[in-house]
Length: 70
Image (cartoon, rainbow, N blue to C red):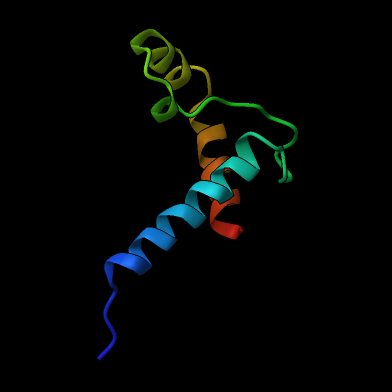
């Protein structure tokens, strides 16, 4: 019986994070050359609030789709 272990879970989290960086930081998708700060990466409360409000819901959905396709 297959099961997901902690190691596999960590691998999946790292791959997902890398794919999100490829899309949002390096512009490696059809969305275009965006450079968007991930709110979780900032320790500053004001910067997290600005990052959360810096993109439209449509753009967020497009980013999620691009990450999923990677």
